Length: 386
Ligand code: GLA
Image: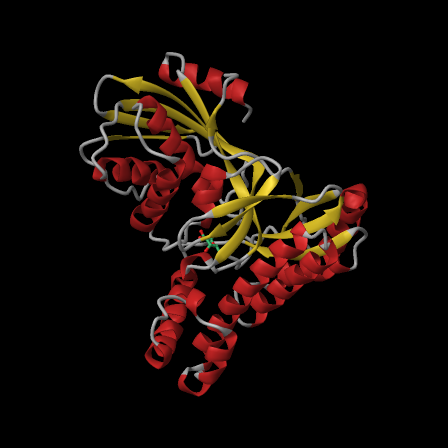
């Protein structure tokens, strides 16, 4: 829903006007998949699709939240915050508020109305966008002293504790700290980053396989523990290996006989993916876009074969993209198991690209494929216009 309509909806629902409007973007990850929780590197960009929160403070301790998209209202007291089974979307709100409380911040009660155009369950981080939007809303309402990195970390903790997904920091970080026109090269160990402008003449096209992805399925947490298994064996042999970030492919090969095949292949993906991120950022900065594109394809192959988080439809999308006009590179993006592919396409050929991929995907899978041409956008902020 547009921001103007949302203002009217807030007024209708709560019988008063909102006092602030906050927007946080979804994201697309260009390269660096399943590396963040291994202390590695990622290269995501925020997209021009947002979760919007309208809010007004209350004088009591009550939080009321209305999801316009789910048509559901829920409330809870600041003094008793528990996850809700009936209203799962509200756990992003509850989780973030609980994190503020846990850290000793004083918050006002509030009425909230939430709406978004980040596709849900598509691997474009609608959950991180709502968490970060709520974190910013309460920062402003409570006039709290907290920086954007802390807000991202708090949002990640909310997801761990209230949603049960042991996600890394990438999604919340980019939603909080993205800079317009760039992707962030982020070191997930020390959270240092640099903003890298995307090449002129190239566009990011996201193709949605329309296979719904369920991140809270145990597969994601299972991948994490498989990586930890590889770390234990590598650390026993070499010492000083706290995360897969610390290991090289040579070291991994040397312990191959001591590792079961699955954790070996998981580790091979993560270590090689970290190398690919570094190489991809260098290639982009040097204007070597074909090289950048080639690394995207290799990332996809590694996610498909070694990490085993792709699915038939995502593979079809990447194969079709490879043959389409204007393509530079393509891969699945996000956690996988469905969701979207990210495609780097020459801007002048975007229409032809979509005209080639969309019907071919439908013919091959029987599923329609929404596509989004995404502008790399800025992170969370208060909107001045509503
Ligand atoms: C999800 C998680 C991220 C990251 C990606 C995979 O989006 O929230 O932290 O692990 O999957 O790269």
